[in-house]
Length: 420
Ligand SMILES: [Fe+2]
Image (cartoon, rainbow, N blue to C red):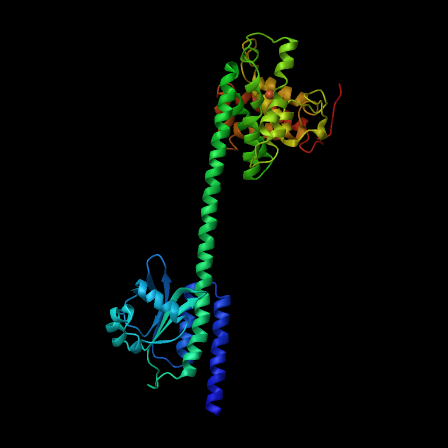
């Protein structure tokens, strides 16, 4: 009686420990190994092994073994009939000597015989085979009692649940990875489409070739300098690429007029922000505010822009970024009726218009990014690539940038409006 009680206490202890193992061990292999040792130890079983079932390969792969020699197969195949029988059997002990009718026990008879594998427990969890436990003889040589078998089943259930959980996690990880890949593909497609649109917009205007693409890149530079995260930077670039999409509906002869267009033509051209907004807003963009950048990229802080004549704080931030990028590209591109001015003059212009047309914080960020490239603090050559290295004469423009940065406070309030 006392001996039975002690055995019971010992078994419960092992079971509790097993439960803890399954619930808390991060390392799956280690959890299985420890669980097998607990199972063997609690009933003084000489040897055994735990295998995980692969539904795709129809095979049981050994995860942990103890006392089974190297020549014991580490991978055991199951045929359809074995699977069916295991499922019918459920998570119950099978005596190998009684199960020789099953192909599985016929195929591995020699190995089981040699290692005296007496019991097999299919780990059937929620009507699915997740593994198998094989057990050798008891150390005292006695046959397994029905109590022993109950204990084995209880412990096997814990191990089976551990494997099922692991399978679930692996499946979840696989799906997350698959989703991530799908999302990346989708994002790539979106970006390619955006670039194709930018090229289409730029094709319409033969005098400002590559304008949208450059505005996208300048917007990206500003967002980077503001310390935005990767997604936001990409969003700013997209907003720049698409800001003039409304021009697709404006007559080519107006866009390509080799002279200064008249008031009527201006009115026609000035519809492009609103049209752009109408084109872009029904589309679900992965980045916020892309349509708003199109609509408000010609607004000015002092309220003298269009289409709505908004004042500083009413202008969406992304539109302010694109407005600066857009104007900078317009200033640094040759037009049929006007050649571009020297870079230092343009920087002076930005400084002068900071707080009137452009957000001071953004002009500062833009100038800082240019200065970093020209002084070598930044290794990339984004500005040089877009403007040509001969255009950016460091000796002239660096002092100009420094003085511009000294003259403007990086923390200037964006609500500053000069009305002169
Ligand atoms: Fe525009």
